[in-house]
Image 1 (tube, rainbow, N blue to C red):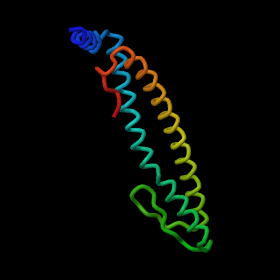
Image 2 (cartoon, rainbow, N blue to C red):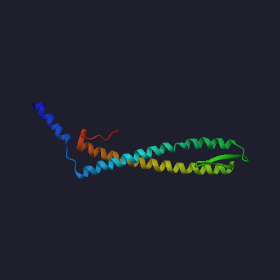
Image 3 (cartoon, rainbow, N blue to C red):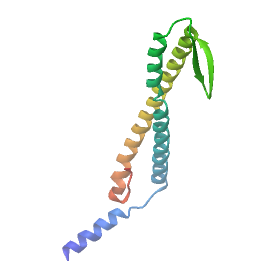
Image 4 (spheres, one colour):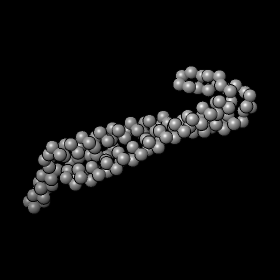
Length: 132
């Protein structure tokens, strides 16, 4: 009989009332989680930086008077090697800036999600699932 009472009390803990503030926290967590997933997808796309680094090595090995094909968007342009190198350096710098900005934003999202997890798990325990 005593065990049944303990189970009933545990069930009551799982059925904690969701206040407006709690719902706002859950919504904020969801928004941060969605933003983080989007950032992770964009970070994967920006992994082309490695390909640009390889391309820089290849361009350095070509003759300076050689014309190379350089991809801009969906098109290829015929550029002299020195101009292609300058363009490549600029593209690498832009991607580096984008990567650092996205990494900082991802870190902020993770920090906010961690803080919200602590608060929400403290109140709802196993009644809420915030893990993937």
